Image (cartoon, rainbow, N blue to C red; front, side):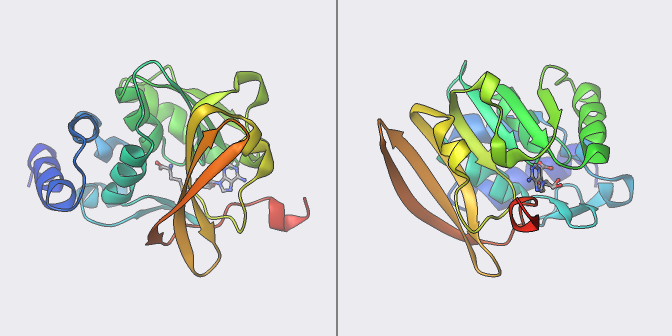
Length: 211
Ligand code: SAH
């Protein structure tokens, strides 16, 4: 099966028949060539209903989870996003496709370099990339309208809450072996928290390693 056909099948069978309703998100998932973000040996599986390995301890999330998190964030054209855990760059490309200015942090320098290549090759050269620990965010570019974390943490990093703008939305997997997505919306000094899907993400590095 060619990539176009596999991609069309992904949109129908993994997104539309589940609960993804935002046509802009479905459209973005139709525009971004996921196979360009997947390691060569997994390319034929790029549109499968599963996460795929990027390296030891790193995965590109399952398409449905990318769509779910993106939809929940209700991103609007012209907004700014902080994306923690660049990985392959796929999630950053989806947000860019929605007209968002994306700032993305990856702790693994090798993956940062790979994401930069994947993003420019696929037509998204404008994503701002940084290698470092996402726990501290990107203060110079704050506040953000949306913040997305693609690795699990036992608690919400406080610096990231500070960098969420008024009315801003954040989504992240909370927990260790038992994880759930948590959606957070900022209303002034109040942070409204909404528990969402059960998930399984790789752990966010750094905090538990002596910070
Ligand atoms: N969003 C990615 C998937 C990321 S998987 C994609 O679309 O492909 C989670 C990523 O988070 C991994 O690449 C991992 O190296 C990175 N990561 C783990 N801890 C981190 C930290 N403290 N700061 C930034 N990135 C981190």
